[in-house]
Image 1 (cartoon, rainbow, N blue to C red):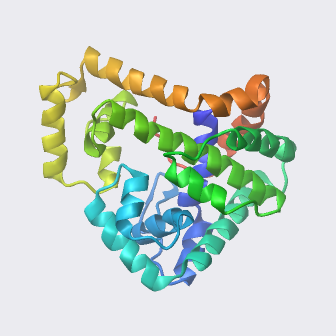
Image 2: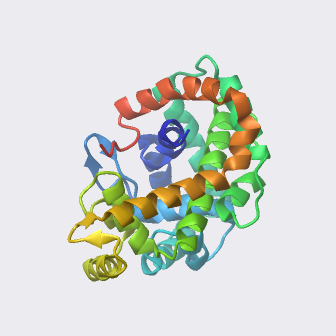
Length: 277
């Protein structure tokens, strides 16, 4: 589910339509493209994704997102609220998401309503306790248009899992820098690669890597067997925490994955999400 859903729900962060909508509100354009994927302006990213929480200070956004350097998030969100109000950026985000998905998938691909129904069934079964971004998205309600409803359902299930994932790695006594370093290696990426996008300094990355070595999770620049096992346990715990969502979808999960997979593939082929491998 994660593999097929993530590029669909998170296309909003790489969609040219989103960059254009935010630029019209006074945010910066996409600062760079890599392998055909246009990356977001940082201020627009933090403000738009965090807007479901309300017009909150950056410290709240940093807490909810979990993996980013709070020193960067706090300043970015403060600047973001100078450029657009919450309703403005939420409307721009929804407009852009719908436009991007329609461009990549077609106006209303076959099975859209059924996929929305199943994702919504899962989201409706979930508890908001301790799940800030999921709760914020749920508070927005349903847009009422087929593609927008589908995107909201996908975003809800994605952010619910993200909230659960943060709870899982915190329970394993890893901090935000450490989980980024471990996850890069666990995904098969070089040490200190994708985690750099979380705005940590070289010193912070080096210090976290040494802490992982001291715990026996890292040897030189590779995960040890204990490190792999620890990251596997975090993934298993995350899966357990999203169990109610998956139980609600139930025996229809294979049907849902079958609907989502070709849409995921179309988004990846269209440069709508980075490919890590």
